[in-house]
Image (cartoon, rainbow, N blue to C red; front, side, top):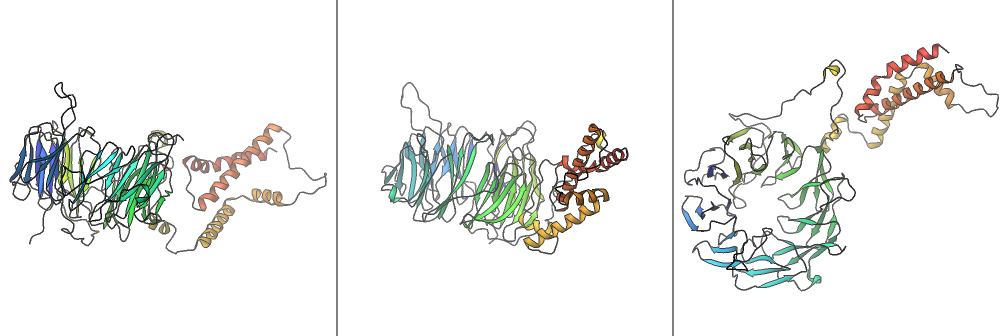
Length: 584
């Protein structure tokens, strides 16, 4: 059987279309393109169904042959969802009231995909958590209603099978995978009290003692909860709207780890600053965090919240594991320049470093070999389009939207787990007609007054290299910490001796000798002019400071721009000091 080729759905001002992924990158003629402006589209979990709403109707088609499965006359529909086993279609439209119906009409509808019958209608005023969540086998579904979670069994929505009541519960996440089903719930703090996240196993909801785990914390206006694939642990990113210390404009974030066996911890991040992204590895035993003031730091942690690998710092704000978990992309999109780093997770080796400027969207292809980046409206309304890449760097397909058009969304077709096995990682770029987009080194602008002077570093912050590159910068020979420290001290002393003048050495020897108690000790030579003596003293002080900077530089410490400028002035200071001392 020939391997499947994932499809890419495209939605924009020119309508909705679908194309084959690499190596074909051609239009899927089985799907009839819809020229009307689509508000939303979605693939089913196994990728066999595709649904979209175009402002007039809601349509479901079979992806394999493009045949219509169902069509609903729902012009106001804004969001769609399909249950994991393709049994139920969920449609949501904005809640509204009329003079005839003061309470309004139900705006959340559940439809039988096979028969087209409406199974149930609910009131769902807020768009947050609008779609019910299902277990993978659809034996359990859950939705939030005021301060309760309502659980239904086997898609029987007329009968509430169980309830979980928590005062002011604002968010929940159902665990992935097989039974038993678990749920993580978040309740914000009230009147200075702590917020908390609890993990429950369905249907054991009888009081706080029935919880599998409980984690309480302060400084949380909102949280993001993320289950791992095996449903054994949850990562909770707690955020505040305002950072009371004034360190960050974006508020303050903390990361918490909660396991279903009751264990919990605060993940200690070595660098201060916001948390940009948190993502689980598909193997469920590691997670990656992008954090800290720019340039951001990236670290992989294990289930004990201990660091496994440090990727150093750089212009990044997002991390993406491949579906098979063998590759990791670190990227800087949005207000960053679009740099991507593709890493081999097993060897922690850099594979490629392409650049996709102005990108607002990134997604892995289910085959684990390709990715798509896109520039979409309304985030950016100019230069809209998308590119399909191979992870080794080359662009395999590119599409630019016409100047009068907009691109709103691109979406890969979903596939069941195991359809695309992990392949051997390549480090050599694959051939492509469009070539690679490795960033070319660009010259920094230098004003005319500085063009004939030595070039100094123009970076505000020196980037920290990855963990496995730090030892290479110090040399090929691996030394212990003590030996490395002694080696640096020896090199610093040697450099200081070469730079120090005989007069300075004599002065240091005299200073190191114990001062006699007798009041008749000879005084240092002076000119008799207080102003001249003061000037000489200041010059010696500056020269001494330069010697200390040299020691630091010899020890391997990076210097700031103003410190490098001080080193460049050493010869002028020595010359000025010599002229003044000759006059004494």
